[in-house]
Image (tube, rainbow, N blue to C red; front, side, top):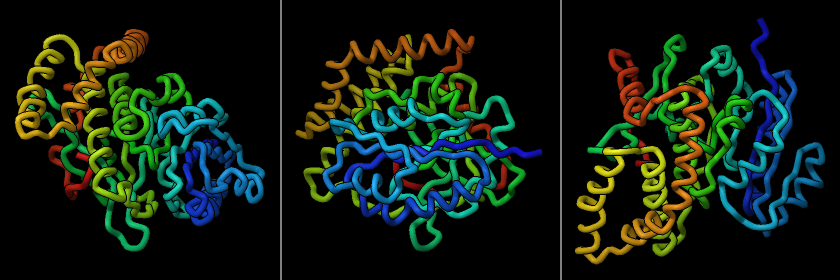
Length: 334
């Protein structure tokens, strides 16, 4: 039985012409190797390096979407998702190098009705150091955290992952559109992919990891100086707050607010570290937007007749790893 599906590849880019020049040929090679229908959608997020002109000249067959304003990761992907025409959507960072047989081991997952998406093994550009594998969540009180990565070489043993990273995720297009794409509250970056995956899990859909599907990623330094590093840290913490505020309810939400006030906000204020306080103020000032997103999640859950909580999701994934022979390792993104 032919299990291949048609694929829309979505690549957002911001001043990434050099990355497109280096890795887009390999993306085309991998997608053509599937033998199925495909399209490549490039979303230029207001670049200033001639990325759009390069695509028009060198890849006229690509679908090019040019944003008038830089709005970040979530908005760029959402524009691509709206334009996508095929059965599966590959969310792909411009700095990722696909192997020629990248898709070969992933078709099987989409034979199951409840597959939301699958990620492959992300390794360094040169070498075999694993950057991303399957992720396991944990709870610290009422705070959701990522715990450890894990994998197995046993191809018959399917692994769950807490989330599908936005740099590399093959997703059922119908489900991705039904779920509403990325929540742009998380712009410009960080946690939108985690929240999207959590939403999918709560709708009884599954996120998988396939160790045999290998891609390589350029190691890029996001922050070039201490000021930028602090900004990135604050945005990351702010977006983790947003994620909790959207997905916790009732006593759990009240308890979480109490926990972060005691364990995070007050200690940092006493230490004269104002970054977390600024993130907390953003959380409070955006209550109306958070309420709107909470309502969107509730509508989705009611429509799919599910009452799965974040605690159910954490338990399900952690229990799935028990008694399995896997290799565990720590990675970033905690």
